[in-house]
Image 1 (cartoon, helix red, strand yellow):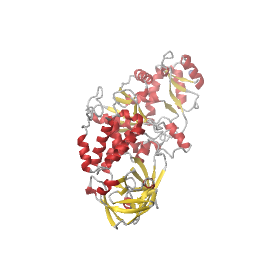
Image 2: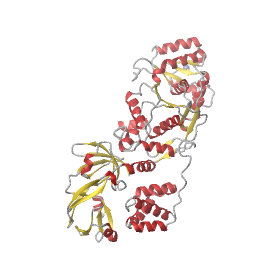
Image 3: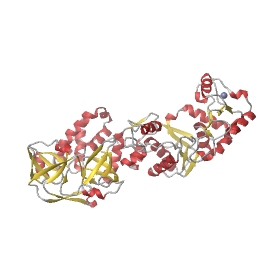
Image 4: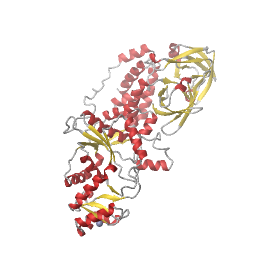
Length: 560
Ligand SMILES: [Zn+2]
């Protein structure tokens, strides 16, 4: 059964692409139909290779005949509810969502999806989307991260209706704090960190009972005036010391931090903590809907709702969805910072990472994020695993028709094919779009082929240089046989890509996701590409030109 399905997909693909099925495309299609096969990729891949080999050796007529003999492939109906489900309590023109990055790290794929979800919902209901930089940690927030986030959002096509920096609104947060102090719902605590922890664990309240509102207000003013050092005083919320939810046990809502802030400089030394800042900012800025992953947790929602109730602030509709796990990738800012420090990755855009910067530099295009978001089902609360095969199959489908094809020969080995005629060979930039033009080579007897192909040469079988000629092998000697594909089909063993020695070839390096550098030669027209362009190197994969150096072109590998 599965074999028939694979054969069907391989034949279909081969007929679409000049008689040559692409293993990557076939794997992608069969996994979409039979996700269970993922369990044993090794034997699946082997099976597919075998079938493709057979299919690719057939003539177009044979392929068509074989396809017609197979039972028609049942494809599941495309889900009608593709895209985002309706939002509860959404009124057209009134929805306001927010994107709340912390400018202390680079955004990664998971953030990108969450940003896109919030943005897309705002647009879906003709509403607004606010970008809010949560820059209340003076030690971690930097302008560099603000700029990179703005750049990433722009890349994703997100145009926020308003940009807010929480640090610009500190006076408003102070006012809210003072309201709570006057209600005896907040108090200044002088306990040490350890003492505070012990008291919270034991459910014991400390400083509030020993003070009144006036006293607390005086202490608070001293905090604001810089009279206390870091750790000497905090403002705490009078929550519920008996609550099973530890978050509710008089949490700290403001702390002293005297580090210089990238934006406010030395203006403030008292900073709100996350839950306090969040609950107030969402309400004051008129946010109606919050879409976030369920890892946020209901404990914090209880605290944020409590704060809003105390201050008479409006609540938001919260829609939670399962968090996005990006399989095999480090996404925690702290961990990435460590890896950079230890020299294990080259920076935030190292090709092994899934930051937007890295993915963009590799050639993952912005439409891929949107398609990925549409494929995620937001309704369920279970974590969603995103693996690389998903990303690359979407990206491949988008790039496939857009980008042109070229020859890159890795680890070139020179071979001389005696008797090969001098000829001009014309190869289309894209087999499906002849109007894009072609590349022309002058070929003689000497060629470069990839070492990997060269090592598989076997006597007695024809090898075909793609769209050029067939040759036969005797010992280490290569002899011209014929030019036609039909001749190759009778007794051929491989169709390989190649480069003519006569041409002025380009030196190329390709940086792989694991940072391995592949070296080789590419055809001359590659020299005319501009940095940032993506190409498909035949039988190798998609690559993005990262930079042009004096004697070489440096590409980053995108995906197969
Ligand atoms: Zn205390």
